[in-house]
Amino acid sequence: MDGEISASGLTDLLDSDADVEIVDIRRPAAFDHGHIPGSRNLPFGRLVDRVDELDGDADRIVTVCPHGESSVQAARLIASYEGIEETPVVSLADGLEGWDGPIENGE
Image 1 (cartoon, rainbow, N blue to C red):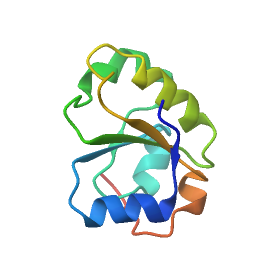
Image 2 (tube, helix red, strand yellow):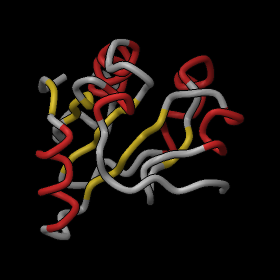
Image 3 (cartoon, helix red, strand yellow):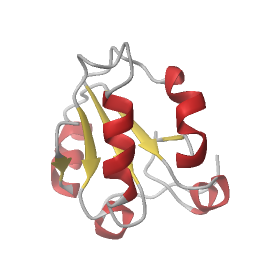
Image 4 (tube, rainbow, N blue to C red):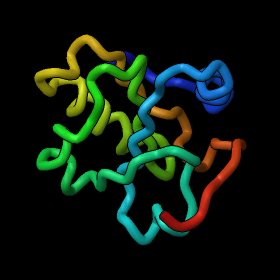
């Protein structure tokens, strides 16, 4: 894991058109209720089984959870996965609670 990124840092990355893969680790119902646009839902409980779905060629992978705690563990897990080790993996500090950008509902 390469640390954390602030909400404003993530906004800057998204505004710069960087190839950022956002991984929301909440349960599907919570994800459908609202998530950062363009994010992918890989629930933490299924992450080990689905981590191979991630694009190791992205400029950065950002993990997201409600408060920025579980996403730290998810970022560590993803960063240890073969094929991802060259891609920076960070957790969104303060999670969705600290996110002040747009929220998308539904899938």
